[in-house]
Amino acid sequence: MFTVRAIIEAMAGRLAGVPGVVGVVLGGSRARGEHTPGSDYYRSGLDLDALRALAGPGVEVAGPGGWGPWVDGAAKGAACGDTLYVALCLAHAVGVLVQALYAADRRWCLNEKGALAVAETLPTAPPGFGPRARALLAAPGGDPAALTATVAAARGLVEDTEAALREAR
Image (cartoon, rainbow, N blue to C red; front, side):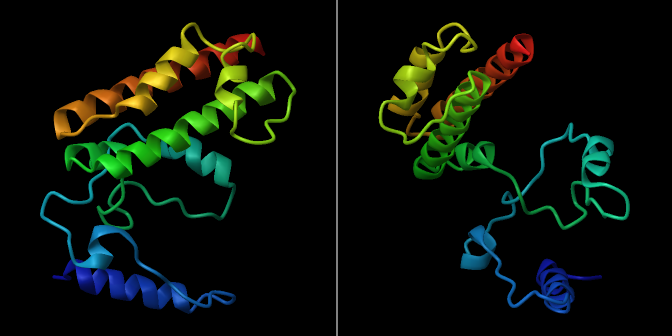
């Protein structure tokens, strides 16, 4: 039976053998030696067939656990009470939503200063986009329960923005 460390080392060795790869870096809590038994998990619901179709023929797409169960995002940070990580994920997510709203309006978002104020006025912005985004960014929370609730609210804003963008097509 392989240990997680042995699996990681074998994977890094295989990756390093790919022509053009000059280095392999492991990040996150495992790389820092700070992982716990609760670290690193996957959410369910990943549409592997859609990912495989997007990647194209001959490309291997690994499903949850295929690379080892050690990758997730803001929900993991929320469960751990990592306010900084969640806040940075939220800022990135809101920034991507703003860019998408600009793109749907066939505009360039040249920098972040004032971008949210403009994005909330665009015709494709879902109702309450600006106030909802500001609430997420203003107070993500300081404990796992509050952070988890904020991540759930962020998911709702993402879903509503995606729906508004689909309707605008």
